Image (cartoon, rainbow, N blue to C red):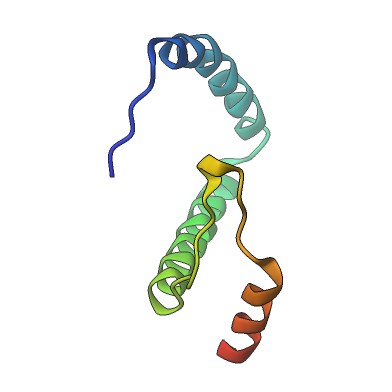
Length: 84
């Protein structure tokens, strides 16, 4: 899969990225080095669990977001209940 931005999108990214990077930095500065290490481990664990779930339980249908659609939430709930 490939993703590219329009010039307008690149300009928006140039404008917003420094702001969001500063916000993230300020938030992380409230954590100790040990807290950051624990957060990093927890995020790695969650990422691996999500990747495993994605491989073992692929969605039957995907939303057509370009047309404003969404996946049928109720059918997804039923599928998950059967899976677990």
